[in-house]
Image (tube, rainbow, N blue to C red; front, side, top):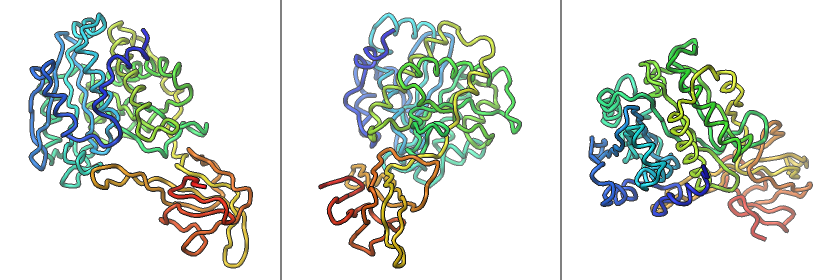
Length: 384
């Protein structure tokens, strides 16, 4: 199977970038080709519709949801790419639709998506509300789970650019987790199915992004939806769409999430998750907070009248301004920073740091400065 070609054929070109709202996906849900498979299954805190898409005639039931966190949109894009595949009429689509019934919630948190926030309009993290079910969005997700009775759950998320693959210096472009079902993090039959499937997906993705796949921390938290569903006996996989070099719009990562989805269902079709692949799963390196967006090395700084050579780092804040996501770089730390990496690294070669403030890279200060009055940086990037 040529996954690159498959993605190219099915990519939904009308949605791109990081800011994906209900207004962006509603036209897709109302397309003539899929509207009969779409329902409104509930409302958000602010009364926005929560849509479902259900397709397939198979006995194997798959439950997928995206944008539980409103500012995590990469998997929403990939999910629509996959929906296009299901409606393509191809032999693969027919095989998938004969084997599975897919139940998708493309955007669980439309209010958070509009505000570009993790939480919903009540400032509640829906992924910490799986037990109390205080929010309408959480109740919708749980009601579908109980009515649909899935055989597998796919919990689709994004993760920040700070995550790398262990201490390798490579970004965690895609990460996975088979959530724990108890405090002891034991492996029962249900969790093993998720573990085995992740091991299979990893085998596929390593061909495309070798060394850039991570394993998310499996500490148990029953308030998290994945842990709850795993506890209730349904194999559940957490997807985390992360950073690929220079891909801040996550259009390249989107492709790898699509690869992961297609590979998941191909593996399940072939019943290729039998046995015990826990060792292979555990050999996937863990996610580690190891990256900053910018790292400036060997910078001369005048510190209380003493010149020192040190390093500093800056990180983007994704700020919603006039309905656009603006990446603004702010200085976050100064020091040795041993063990950390930068997605963009600049060696100042002992040039003197200067800025329009106090000639010191203070925390939370915009990354606008110059070196020796000759090399100028605005928003972390060289301008001349």
